[in-house]
Image (cartoon, rainbow, N blue to C red; front, side, top):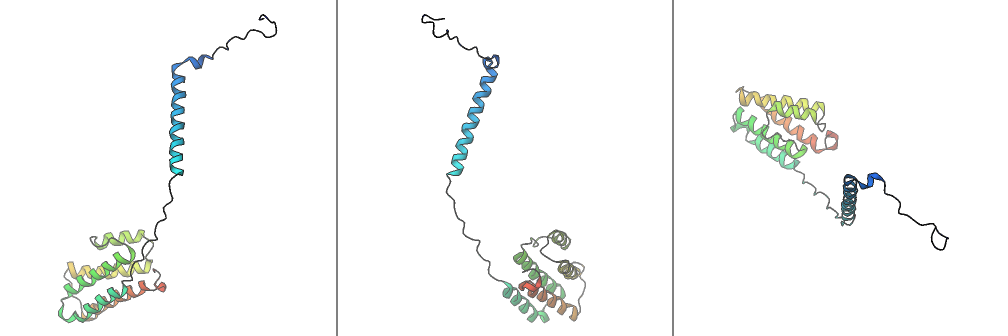
Length: 175
């Protein structure tokens, strides 16, 4: 009792033993630092101004350009060898596939392209099959030096034109 007898002497409450460990003090300080950094990052994240992005620019419709290139090729058909016609037709269709479907076919073999096209659902199974036949024929003329008859050459141009026209319309299944 103290002198007045009203209040018992207060003694210091002993600290728990874990509090006296330097590891627990270090852990406590580390938790405080992590919380302070997290609060700072959260404040910084929430204070950022929202930047509205402009909508992606619309791509121009190049279907008429590809059809024009095929028409020019058809007009020069009489002056071209089967080899030159197959290369030109294949190039136009490959350019179209790169533009229309964002395929990277410029430096791929037919087998590589058809393998990657199988994984991509943009083209239907029928379209992939037609492309395989088309590019296979072109490869036969280009690499095996296979000759093409006049109807086969015309069919080459017609097939490319049909494929491009179908890609230009929603009914083509790819627009």
